[in-house]
Image (tube, rainbow, N blue to C red; front, side, top):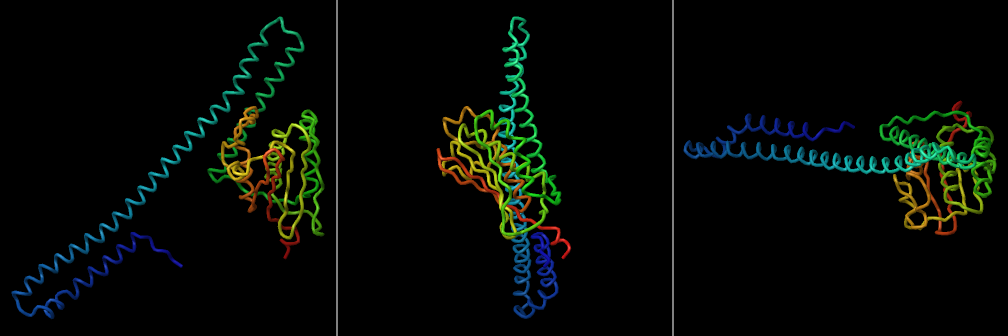
Length: 314
């Protein structure tokens, strides 16, 4: 169905009314005012009526455009506000690890340092560098999402292998924190074969959720699992960390949002990870949500639809 723009509709109405008025107004005048003197007055009123209709249509046209301009202006102001907030947050997040790099690099110049002190300072510099690199990667991902540059790249994925392959990546960090990290093979309802998924984006989302769990879990365990359900596959990351207040379960997926409690101030991070995870899941056609009670840990789930190679053959 063709949808006419408002401007075209106004022009069409004006043309129809104008043409009809020109073609039939004289006949209408003769019919309603056979007396020449009355007809002269009627011609005046006829002209005034035409001017009134023209002004009314022009007002409607102008009002519509002013509304569009007002909305565009409000959108531009909101965009500027978000950009300013984004830059302010990014500047703050970059400054903190950069100060660590610069400060401890300066301390390394002290020739009286012991080998143990040097190694400690180098470790701080490495961690600060990793934090800046993570932030840069997050900014790149956010930029690609905002500009619509994210594309799906489907391939045959063994979901069990995908989940368990992350163990080698996160096991060292879990051991360092004294947290048990468990990866379970993918279970399901009897479906066999690899699934057509975007492997890199699934890994990215899982990595964000596991990093988040490691950040907020100081003891206990983290469990990573997946399950095939009908035409979707569900991935779950469960931890025994600090938990999330019920009122913040939706807000945590917004940019630059972290769990807003006084005892979380010691946790680093820009608050971009979960926003990126949500965007990637939605681009894959899925949903993501969190279940949690403060002090009792959290469960993050995301589901994405999938196809098998057999589906493409049909």
